[in-house]
Image (cartoon, one colour):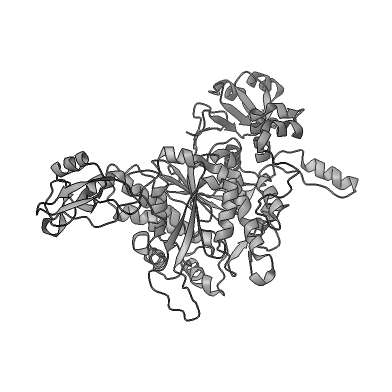
Length: 625
């Protein structure tokens, strides 16, 4: 086999092109698209040019936002050892960084791997901060914020209604993130997005475009307040928020199984039925329903001729099974029993109205943080864990499924995942992504969070609050929960990664005319890697570029002693990668590499002699940096 050059950049446009070539290969000639042939292949699905009018949802900046979604990432993720819990064994991930760049970095490793996404983005109510994406250099503003390059800056700006293009700015922030997020969902995956009144109609139209309106699953109205507002200036008090739900593919999701919520309703056992607690419903059909008409006689002799839910033979079988009751001392119309134990197995379908008593409320979310941190208002309006727990349930998450939240905030989604696992003896995993948004001690909304971070020795930013919450939740679970033999193997941990510059030299466009400057630019490109690279950090970037997830199992090949060789494997991949980043690869290392035909060996190009390259060419796939 030949030796390849390691490609450090994942191009989503190139991947889409390759997929299109598979579907319509006849539309390609010399690697370019023949638009006329493509139109012929698509037939009636192509819009007639003569009809210039068509339905579209557009706004200023949409084209640039779409282009930004396809722009390759400029950064990488590096591990932050010591900031997590049980880092050597956990598969839960917390990523600190700009979520657009992070989502791009996850594309290759996590494409079609995420079962559920939940996000609670800024609601754009006038004083919310939104992302100000840099279209040419997306990573720059983030690195300014975190002090990794000179010049202070922030990718967050207040989106004031008086500034103009109020809705457009918010849509430009969200659009590329949704485009990438869709690629991460499994075919039976679902996404839930919390939003307020100001943007709900725009959000739904945008999600219809990105996910397809045929994949709209529902609009949940959640009562976020448990008390009654009393504002004399408002005609309608705001007590509810919106949660929009979409599936990646509605038919696939339906076949895989729609999740159910816990039972609601009053169950009891007044007649000591050995089958346990029960409730009842009328045997008579409701309005708009059809059934069978016949006469039923009650134990007291009363007769009712109505349209009933089932035919007469079904009724007699239920009566024999003691599943029919007659209320009001035997005078009332028949009702059918249904048992709690049976309903628990069947589950209960969620509705589009979520009351605060069942699904939690904002004050409950604040109380959760107070109980963990011992301080009020550390984070503004956190979601209650019960709310996210029920979303996980109706998403029909199963053991080992992946849950993503890329506006993690105080990391409520991680707490809900732990609750879900404990209740079901599952081991679902999560990925939290949060920008280290700085908490300003001079702003009322952030003052308490700032003081808390200073008191416990944390950097005053939202990402630190999220990580600290997870650490304290894990500590409380381990200390207070009864960890049975069944639960002892659950994943009570997480590890942290942070967004950083790529370790690979990237070509900088030169627009000047000075030959000396141009030659210096070429000289800097002679080395594939930046001068300050570290093996452990570079290994993570290589993993992501090769499609291996962040929780991949990394081991040092002990049988090889002349060099340090990392072996990386994952259940996501049907092959392994072996990576050696030493300045020279020993001949005994080459001889001892346990490579199959599918496995890949990656090393520095300068670490191999010509003779070694020849020897390696027969040992599977070889890539050099």
